[in-house]
Every structure is written in structure tokens, then in C-alpha cells.
Length: 264
Image 1 (cartoon, rainbow, N blue to C red):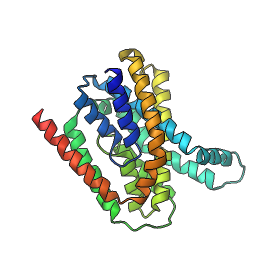
Image 2: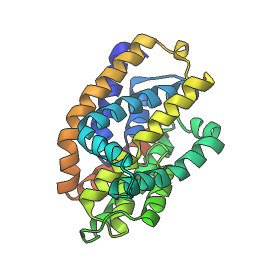
Image 3: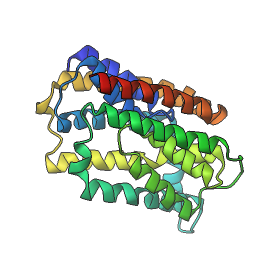
């Protein structure tokens, strides 16, 4: 993978991470179009690095929220920040289980598996269509909701299922406020990504020698910068726009991906 391709994929990651259209699915489509021949483990490595970049951009945009939560955790009395942190931890459990026990199987699904991406984009579209029918409320995400949303996040580890789309849709279908659902969705993934990076670094699985390190850094920077722009502009778009627009987009891209896979 050369530097230009890495930058293009980084921009794709940054722009699609915060829209319910599957950043991982678009990355796999981008790799296929650009002719990336990385083995599944290398392909997953590059995907993880780009997700790490957008996680950093999420922290920058939500820095005030995160600071207030961390500050609240040090208060002796149980408060809303303690409860929010517990909900985040609960939401992480399903994804952690999948990551620990099914990591090898998951890795094999990455690496230009375009047919799977196309089919999963259609699943994402169905979720978004259903969520679009739900009425908006002022309900906060509850502890039980956090676990169910966490299951959606674990399923969204499949390439082609939008993590934000799945988690926001699930939260809205559970009757939660769309704005609160979006905030919870974007914050709940940050600990998981950092945990994944830490695990791979400590275990030695994150081997940058297997790819061009310059290309990886270029992709990281592109994803971080485009993620900053997307996180400030597109999050508002997700909250205000109808999810059916994104569902239609996923249907179109999903069908194109399936046709592309059949013809190739």
C-alpha cells in the first residue's frame, strides 16, 4: 500500500466514522478499488490504526465532556458521571468477549471480503429504516439499554455494519433521545479502541514491520484531521437529518458492492 492510497483510506475512515454508513465497510471497499493485496492480519492492522486516529479526534471534540466525566469520578458521592462510566463499561462487555474469544475468526473477515460488506450494508440500511420510524424522546440511556447497545456494537465489528448506525439505531429503538444516543454511541467506542491498541502492543501483535510504516503514519494523520472535521460537522448532521437518507445510501452502496463482488 503506497502513501497516496493510505491517505485516501484515511480520509474515507475519518469522514465515514461519524456517519451511520460503516467506516470499516467503506475501508474494505476502498482497499478493493485501490487494489490492496494485504493479508487479513495486515488489513486489520491498518483498519485498527485508522480507528485509533478517529478515536483521538473524538477525544479532542468531546474533551469537555470527557474531562467532566473524569472529574466527576473522583467525587466521593455517587453521581451521574459515575453512572455514565458504569454504563460505558457495561456496553463494552459484549465487544470484549467477541474480541477475546473470536479475534482470529474476525480477522479473516477483513481483507476485501466485498460480498460480506455489501450484505452487511443492507443490514445497516434495515436498522436505520427501523430507527427512523421511532419517535424522539427525552429518555436517557439506562443500564439495561447500555448492555443491549453493547451487543449491537459487538455485532458491528463485522465489516459493513455501521457501528454508529447499529448503536444509535438500537438506542433509539429502545426509546432513548436521539441526541443522547449519538453522544453515548461516540463515547462508548473510545475505551475499546485504546484497549485494543494496548493489547496488541503488549502482546506484540501490532507489528508495524509488516507494512510500510510511512504509509501507516500518513493514513493515521489523514484519518485524524478528516475525523476532526467530520466529528464537528457530521455529528450534527446525524442528529438533525433523517436516518432514512443514510439507509438509502447504504442500500445503494451495498448493492454496488454485491454486484462488484459477483463481477470480480
